[in-house]
Length: 383
Ligand SMILES: *Cc1c(COP(=O)(O)O)cnc(C)c1O
Image (tube, rainbow, N blue to C red):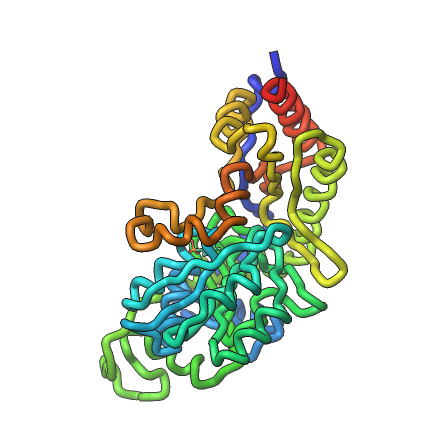
């Protein structure tokens, strides 16, 4: 009997909540009303823009709403194309459809698992208006190359850094590489507000557009109450969530440090194991915040992610499948079957990738148990 069978199931993700978070939320629920109703939102936004190094930050109910507002602010609509990597969470792409534009799915790079510069370039047409670049699992793409192609072709970049708070590329923070950057504070992410998101930009015009669009078309500069200049959205973060986010952000170095420690424990074990093709990528130009520790099994072994996840579950370990190519999902399949032949890396890697337990409750013993289970599963199946 594995000792794991007696334990609580090991979750794949989860936050780190301390007394600080509880104190801040308590204070918000007691005091953030009347004249102070917006206090925690302002504090959280200020701290966030200082951390990223951007001029403006807007706290929102989710990262999905942040991407939606970014596309609205950029004026993207029917007839426009927006390029997005084929392998990401659907929230990167769905808002393109919300505004009536068409997503175009580009392939990912074999090492970084982020959009490949070459594939991005091949997807450009006269209709291309924007690129949504995704920092997958905390990893960073070839930002210099991608930015060069984008600027040569007049394409605006939105950086989806939902999974990458604390990551860096050449010393610059994830989320600061596009005209607009967006983050998620979903409960599984590196910092959480329960549900929540943030949009950052240096562009005053985008910032002003977003403030109006996210508040039912009311201009914050206009003193008339209930005066709507356009049909907008209701995308606001509550002060209790902002208080939680502020407490989390004040611990960001500790939290990113813990993610990096978890990765080191895994790396020491995984690199010695047979049958692992690769794990999260980092080099001299990248600081990876390792949101999810991820391993790709050698396709030659013929063990798919579904098999692995089932076997891990038998050992009381929760894993997640590497994201499916969006072009392979029922939500997108019919329109875009062509991507399946074009996006070779996406279709090659995705069936063999899994996310291993990467929550803040993971310690070295957990990592050892997960890796022992992993080895024995791989050994059993490769016989
Ligand atoms: C989590 C996630 C989102 C969406 O975040 P929500 O806050 O849940 O809307 C968007 N993009 C990526 C890459 C994500 O991982």
